[in-house]
Image 1: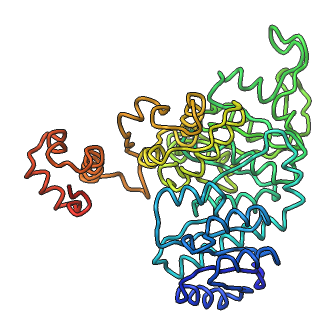
Image 2: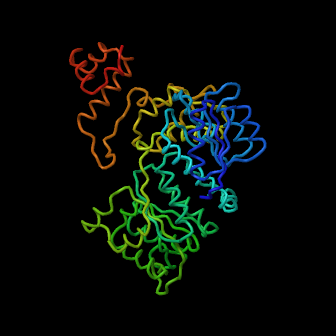
Image 3: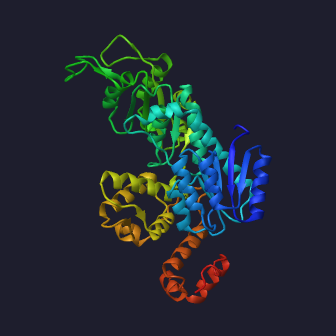
Length: 456
């Protein structure tokens, strides 16, 4: 990261401003600071900054006005919002208008330092890859991966780094997390972006059909083979082949695929002559392949050939800060496609989505927002437009987090919190729903440290 990165800091609190200014200058950045919102707008008119750190609540000109003006003047400038009045609505609003990150006061200087570094890394990559991105933007169905989660940003950085290297990649993660999207992202950021991107689900075909799809056949190779047919491996030459659900591939097919990767040639069914191919392979799975290797269901040598670089995409439940920004991305997408003037998502809808564990991950969130836009008769998505089961209950899945399976006590705490929220903190009604007396509920609230949060 270049040391001369330009930072603008805006905060009407003198002490906070001086602390931020000191830290940014110590990092070697070219730092400008002001306590005045109007002066900040004047500075933005006069010069471009790489990153803007701004307080949200200020007199005359607030942080939202600065954010919007920044978006108008310099779309590539990243804006970090800092506020001592953190609310869900303000967080949603800032993300809706394109803020890079939202930090609540009192903040930790180390946190601010790290967020600024990540924002500058994004700005730096934008500058370096401007020409490439302009090419990518011209592709039909261009790839967008929307996230402000730190782990996802690191994944995207890794994807950008490996894209030009041509190495094979194995992507793992639950269904609906966006594995194929990541594969396309790597392809369109690689030197193969002008070539084809082909995809096949290895679990969707019988062994014979999968062989025909991948390797093709010669005329007369089997009954009904009236003409020659190129397989996906051959047609993907000079491009990328995405092998989804690779763990479902039959062992005999694994041997043939391994040979293609090693020899860089493919043999059509019914042919005696191999065809040279130049293909990058990206595979994906929602299973733990190491278990399949132990049981003999998956070849270890093929695993090593495919797993040159591995990417694990976390489930949406582990990056909930992405839910509001993804919701608004899908809102804009489907309101445009359906030509409907739906521009907002009611705060209670966002709150409900934030409390939902999304067993179907990003794909499920997209379906929910698409449904909301389709059913909306006004300018916003409301609770009434959500699926009935989502309105009635908050589904909690029993997925591992950081390698730990939630205990029964963990689930009890979560359930009591939910019931108390649904009853508006009414202990009498909550105890009836929970099937315990009021004194037992009070003891549990005290035991779990919830009694202060749930006062009537």
